[in-house]
Length: 174
Image 1 (cartoon, rainbow, N blue to C red):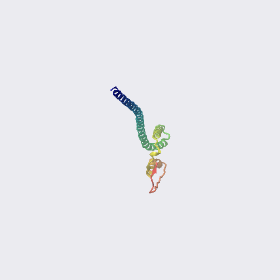
Image 2: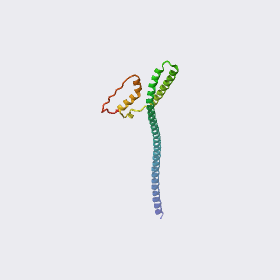
Image 3: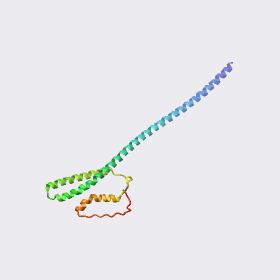
Image 4: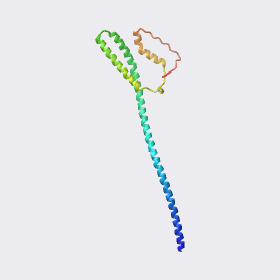
């Protein structure tokens, strides 16, 4: 009987040792998995932070691009009438001649016009667009618009401007 009990105790003890070894191995695997999970979580946290930073930079970049486009548009819209004002001021300066009162006022307008031109130039410098912003433009329309702006100066200088455009003039990328 004792021998049978000893045998059972021994078998039971061996079984418990085997199970204990299995539990230790499983525990080790779980600890290893938890460590890998911790590393993965840290990597994910780093990636999420980088994604947020990149997203913030994209938003900022988009806002700057929109601001640059707006500044360029405003500068170009102001620049055209400003050129006409500048041309007419030059004519007024010639006509004001020796009249000190008139000459002083016209010179003031000229200085302020030059100031506005410098401001517009700064806006254009700020908004300078990449070559990637180039687009097809109708050359004939651009030339006609430029001639329209200079028309009064040409008239006053007794210059006749004649234009001839090719019928199949392609757009210019600029």
